[in-house]
Amino acid sequence: MNNRLLPKQSLAGKVIAVTGASSGIGAETARLAAAMGATIIGIARDAGRLDALHQSLPPGEHRMLIADLTDFAGLAGLVRELPKLDALVCAAGVSLLAPLRLLPESLIDKNLDINVKSPVMTVQQCLKQGRFNEEASVVLFSSIAAHTGTEGTCAYSMSKAALEGFMRPAAMELARKSVRINSIAAAIVRTPIFGQNDDSFFDQYRERYPLGLGEPVDVAAAAVFLASEASRYMTGSTIVMDGGSTWV
Picture (cartoon, rainbow, N blue to C red):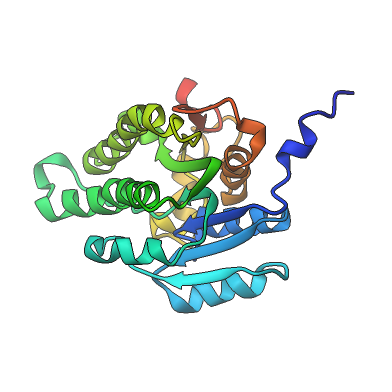
């Protein structure tokens, strides 16, 4: 058995910042990374949920930072509080939907501000302020909505497609600093981003997924892989995690 990759999957001694860390995929990524030895810098708006995340992590020098990542004027100050990072996982996001003929400008702006401008400007500030260690990794969260067509998702799909459009040229620029950047395009998983806590919302989609609906930890596992040295030869790539739904 070839065990050469196994040490590269470890996150021991790594410092990983996770935005949107207070719930859903962000929280699961933080927990899984911490369980694999990483020190977590959790960033989110909800102080109570951030504290709950902190309490759930194994002992370590983890820090929680309360911040609104759409406060672009204050973003430089937030990044100044960060230590040198081995990975930045941009998990903060929203899914705001409306049919095209009823789509208000405000909903377009919110999708773009949170799903695109926030991660783009966070990465930019980390780069400008030298917050990335050599061979650091950036993980973005796209969506299969960037690749498929579903009624009512124009603004959301547009934001995720824009994020992937940013990632590819950014990969070329970041490579000069030995920093990688990749994204995960997940299908619907059981996460609060959809604003639903009961099974009725998810039941309508279940039969579209040959492998069944995913859980946040499934996507978190891919994020941890991209944050680790096991993915050292990947950049500018998107991992599609759709339970087979794209081919149905």
